Amino acid sequence: ELNKYLLMYRSSPHSVSKKTPSEMLFNYNIRDKLPSIFNPIVEHEEVADRDKSKHKSKMYSDKRGNAKVSSICPGDKVLVKRMRKTNKLSFNFGTKVFKVVERKGGDVLIASKESGLKYRRHVSH
Figure 1 (tube, rainbow, N blue to C red):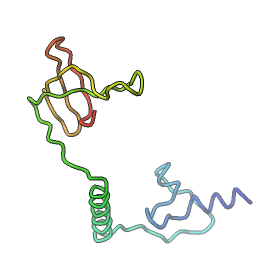
Figure 2 (figure 1 turned 180 degrees about the vertical axis):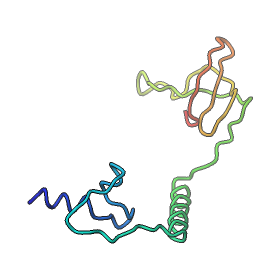
Figure 3 (figure 1 turned 90 degrees about the vertical axis):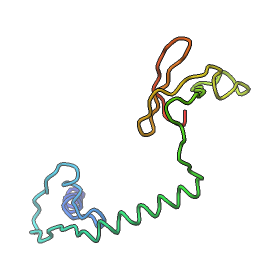
Figure 4 (figure 1 turned 45 degrees about the vertical axis):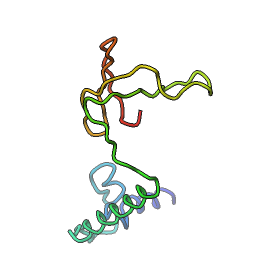
């Protein structure tokens, strides 16, 4: 009984993705006893609506979370966040000053003046 149920579940299309679970996992449909006349056609309007609602929810969450665009650019001097704190009274950021060499999206390449070491970190760290 369970195997029959799983076969029907895996061969029936999902309401949101319009694809069967087997097609999403294995890239092919399982043949079942019932012939399927469902041919998924994703309309451009549907995709545009999904993108619009996604953008709307992103704007809402950015507004609620007070998200701001980072102003770090090459040439800036920054402090690096400590990944491991020794105790709860220690500072969140180290004392060494680093210089931003390059920025790609959210990643920043920083270099130490004293030792010349280069690190790649995320903008928030």
